[in-house]
Image (cartoon, rainbow, N blue to C red; front, top):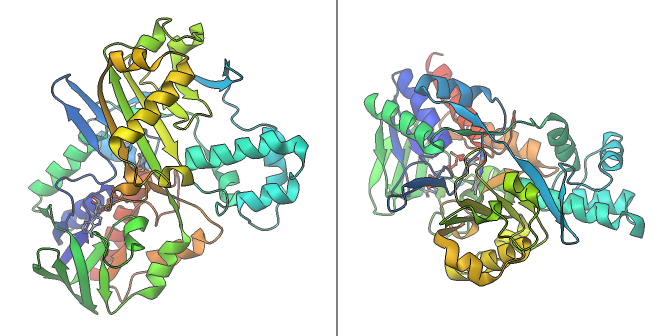
Length: 433
Ligand SMILES: Cc1cc2nc3c(=O)[nH]c(=O)nc-3n(C[C@H](O)[C@H](O)[C@H](O)COP(=O)(O)OP(=O)(O)OC[C@H]3O[C@@H](n4cnc5c(N)ncnc54)[C@H](O)[C@@H]3O)c2cc1C
């Protein structure tokens, strides 16, 4: 039995691990020149640091991630620090992101049926008195879930709100360490990982698939697991990562289009010192010294530090539909926006930031043809669409990845790992029938 896996991200690598443990032959075809997908550690040898261009946090004590970490001998480090919001030029320390939070949640609990967040607000809080509430809820849905309030599910938001773990962690050494462990493990078990290989066509009949790559190579197997992001599955013909199925799978592609596609631009700024800690910021407040998150209304609104590590890195975050509008902007333009935003937030001049900046990197995920989507968000149609995508086609074509799994900690690495694991187990089960 041979299985082709399209994509060497968390889902693809995890599926390979489980298949190989069950003695199934695996070939992984990966478009990029690296493994990891939306896990993207960036190593800088000049200044001796590694930063995360993609996934960074572990959102709670998550079972599949924890099991892997234990197997790999890796540990988690809890994030610390204060959550500061800039309001009328003053820093306020508050985890409460949404105005009239209790009222918003209470009303949601009484909903008989799901609806998009924008409709929910229009229906129940459409007066002047609730303007700040409407804006803050939309800002939260966009910034945290990378979602579009026009389509994001209200009940999914409520569920997330009620079940979200408070503690956030980072893996000691970063997600790259976990990635290295899995890649090493599956290589030793005989995986054939082929990078720089864009899958263009998947021709299939029951129990038989042939992939054609962009280099016109053909690779055949009994089954295939497709783990590409939503933005790739729904990309139009002619785009660099588009995959054509013969026979076509319109129900699957339509389902992928019904799950919300979240967009993110991440900006990494490495300075010669953590200048925001020492009073240099114009509107300096001693609280900033211990800030984990700085939230504002600037173009790049959200920034975070590496606390408890006091490294001189600030990470800027723009998410939701607004991030997609910068898809065609170049790195220099986005960097300028980031410096503008940060200068305003810290109330210092551009010159101060530019003088102290040693290294920067803009990761424009919507512009990346092999991702487009940073992670999915739930629309009112997501559950049905996920069920459709999770159902294999004639025990031959399987879809996996963060967007297909709807369990604990949705839209995360945990989700991708779990989806890969479940899919591989499904294949192993079909073999023993
Ligand atoms: C900026 C950002 C921050 C995030 N932060 C967090 C976080 O803090 N914590 C967290 O848990 N999650 C976070 N996430 C989400 C997390 O990274 C993803 O949920 C997870 O990594 C997705 O894994 P996957 O295997 O489903 O998809 P991917 O990692 O995208 O893997 C799919 C692979 O398919 C490849 N591919 C695409 N098209 C083709 C093709 N045609 N042929 C061959 N290969 C192809 C891609 O190159 C990719 O390697 C973040 C994501 C982003 C972008």
